[in-house]
Image 1: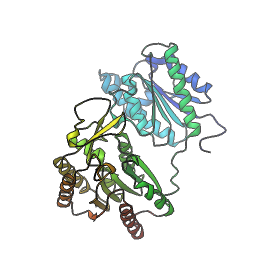
Image 2 (image 1 turned 30 degrees about the vertical axis):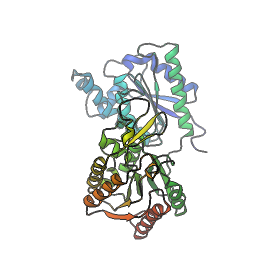
Image 3 (image 1 turned 60 degrees about the horizontal axis):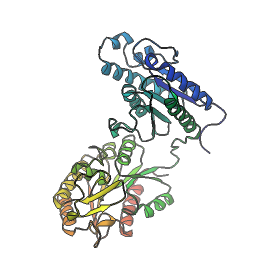
Image 4 (image 1 turned 180 degrees about the vertical axis):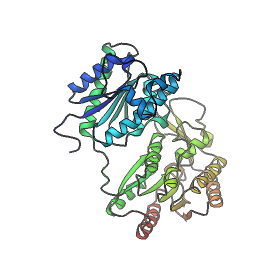
Length: 416
């Protein structure tokens, strides 16, 4: 069993006492009823409210290297809250390290949510974090601001004052974060971790072979679903040095970003591991598909160039030869910046299940164009390996494991 026993989890409760004291006091009581204990941090810049904080706004300002009067003198609420966010991040991270808190719960509208997202990002993966927000799940929140394990709940009807609707949301959030603290199992790091990317195994299936093979070698593998947020989480953890090595075999998010799709992990995809010096084995899985939301007609369902509706959420069109050449050049540019070992496997037989002969994405000429450009643009720091196989064939997994084993034997990859 994971989590804690024998004590009440301490929850860092974040909000503005000057505007939301009744709501914060209600959350304090809900946390107590759920078996937790609130540690209140006031991040407001005006006078305090009726709920006295454990961490005052003066303390928060000081942690940001300023006085509260200096922050008030900005005369700009955006600048003021950004500065308070700096201090809140410093204090929250320190309190977690010192085991004075077990998780966080923040409450806010747009201002409070902006600050809360920074604090959540300052806490490591595995530390429970929940934000109750009037803009939860909104397009106002950019995906790159959402940490991999953040819980959010809409603060419905909660803009001003307590009522039955908002009490329901607040009570759920309190119970969720206390429960998360009791059940949490932060990554223990008992075995070296290999970060791997893929799509659902109907599209890319190599992980079925690779996971047990890596486990038999004493490694643990984590597979990230490359539909935007998965790639962002992968990159964030790679930047922290969480992986002993990466098998980055699904680069569809990069292809999507290049084509202007909203199903993207951002411009930094395929960069963090390389910049960190983490050994990378890379392959161009699913770079032939451009995704779009299936529920939002936008003219992308062009069956003349290959079309696949995966489900009611996501569909894809086939990338043209020229689009694939552009992706090949982009991959090369990103790999050229790597400071660690890089192997780039090119499966000449295809890059995802629906590009085999007879499938809707099959386009031999476009695949050939990608391979040609990949060869021509491959940087000198990359070991380019071509195989006469499809990415879902056993030969691909065998090639990846052969590289991995050689690097482990050389000491380039951490061993158990």
